[in-house]
Length: 332
Image (cartoon, rainbow, N blue to C red; front, top):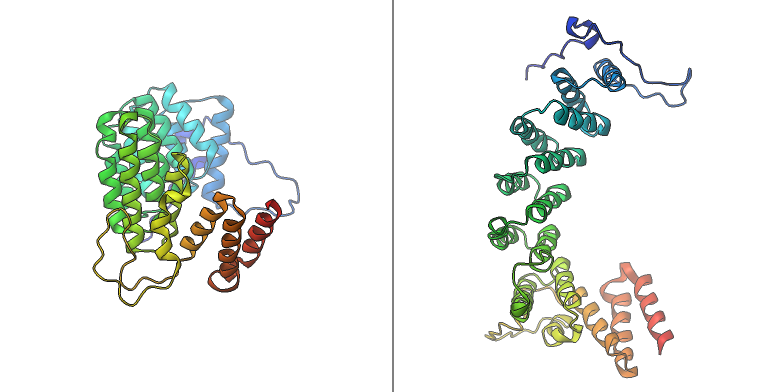
């Protein structure tokens, strides 16, 4: 690969001769000096100078872009760039095009996505933003910043056309990786936190749909913590007792039977062939159901299950299960 030559230093450029650079302040003998490259020191010295003078111009945009490419997490460079974009009425479509490139390159840098939001807020137009996010997610399907940006787009514009295909998008991502916690989190956001999509009259139907959907995914991958957490989330958000799904949970708390038969139960799908049981999450869920009942006999059952987790099925969290036992017994 042929190395790309560094651009000339600003201190050597005639068009910057009118600016007096401001070096970073450091004590005479800093305890832990940072060894910046000459290119970075030069660019940031000139950035400090234009910030001090208040200059906002096209060349300042070029300077901030240079600093950002050297350090995409440089918050001050991003902030001053935004102020400059606004001040000189820089074409927003040009800025978004640059953000497309930088988000693709620095997708795990928060400042990239924050700046993108600010520009979209000015433009008041979502355009193909969801499609862009879907493209970026192909690189990293669990990137927090990308998912957070997608949710911001949906909430900020709150357009029915944007919401319309979101569950289909979730299903596509779920089919790629049913254990992707980011997808489960996004589904909860779309179904229960959009605040509009289903209407109160259909609430019962939506909850039933989500419970069945989650149970079916658990039956395919019983030890998927994300699905179990989603199941809890649905019940807690809708204020339904955990015992609502007791019939479904029980078969996952015991070893897989040798003969499963040909049971077809949409409401309570049994574990599939080859499932690794008993499932830790199911045992915990069952114990919490017993604890929720708050009867002395049910607390005894909960303690029995927590002991099995501490001593056999989930020994790495032994101290936690012992704590749960202690707290439960104190309340009896």
